[in-house]
Image (cartoon, rainbow, N blue to C red; front, side):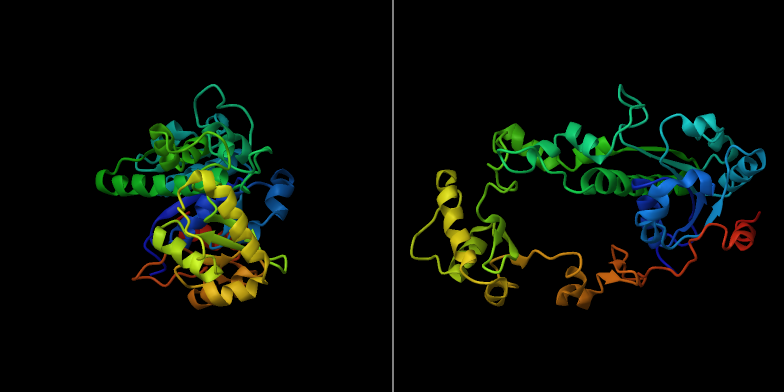
Length: 363
């Protein structure tokens, strides 16, 4: 068995960002995912050049021109044999092609029809263009980030595209697949990145409602305001991350830094600037390896801030095989006691295995 989703068949209509990420996650868990690639002239530089060798891992592809009657018919026949479908096109595009949920469910009533968009399938902005930064801006997430006196810096595209988009779609599809297995009835999973980004803010909205989260940036526990939950630079220009939130961890941090001559109330916000200055001064006095030798792996909650070059080589990541390759890439997660997680060998070039794929799908 290749994973807990072995035997589940998913059709992926080619897109960028969260759509292929969702399909990658499902394939990593053992699902048999078939990517329906666009014709070469329609694929564009985003699909061809930007990381999709990794994002397309674990699943083969065939090329379909959905504006061609024969290829459209083939797509319909594949839908009839699938358990799930992933599409990341703008609202209404699949319907215009004759492949929307109503048409798909007429071919396969048990199909789980997964849709990923930025704004969702309905609402005033549903047909507007956008990217991760736009969706997290409206969710309230982006406005909490960055220095108090500067515009927010986007947290890569992790919160909207991947966390709030692809991951939430995979989560929703798993729930719908479980229900379809019980009832035989499929449904539409409408995953909107703005909804997923907002969902990830649940704790912060709860704190805001009780008055324990201040509206200004850089003044709170998790936004860099707390001197015991932020990053510091060492004398060699390298950085460490400090997460000593609990009192016993804060005490271990101060002990390790040699700052016990003065007693600090770590939650006295009025003294946070002074405390931050003392901690910064301590870290700045020695190179990072000095501090890691004293603090890494202790209750002080201090870790090196690693680059993408260094992270795969860290002893902990190597011991857990957190990364795989080549090319270097994150290994599948989460892990299961009944299945050994690995990236499945598969030629992801469109049409490399076309005849065998269609035969395996019963076509």
